[in-house]
Image 1 (spheres, rainbow, N blue to C red):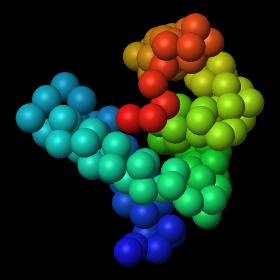
Image 2 (cartoon, rainbow, N blue to C red; image 1 turned 90 degrees about the vertical axis):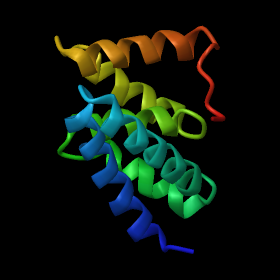
Image 3 (cartoon, rainbow, N blue to C red; image 1 turned 90 degrees about the horizontal axis):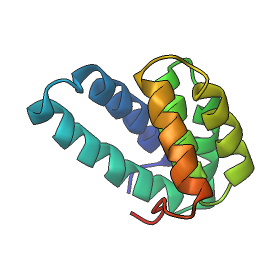
Image 4 (cartoon, one colour; image 1 turned 120 degrees about the vertical axis):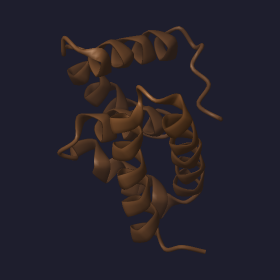
Length: 113
């Protein structure tokens, strides 16, 4: 099994690649699936959860948003804070953060995917 540092790095790189490819579904969809599998592996251990929480302060806002969404399952206050900050942005990631917050607060966000 890959170590947590390697998984964290792969996750970050995959999120950035996905973000850059979002307008091309043939590229973005497989990257999203990879990102999802990496989140599952990271969140399955305490060390992996800590690694995702470290990404809440990443330089890339999309990495922050995806890590914050993943962390809602165990560190909801931290995730909510990051998503609330991102939701103030006037761009796509801000809109998505707002939708994520609404879904989470209404109890409709599936955190076990």
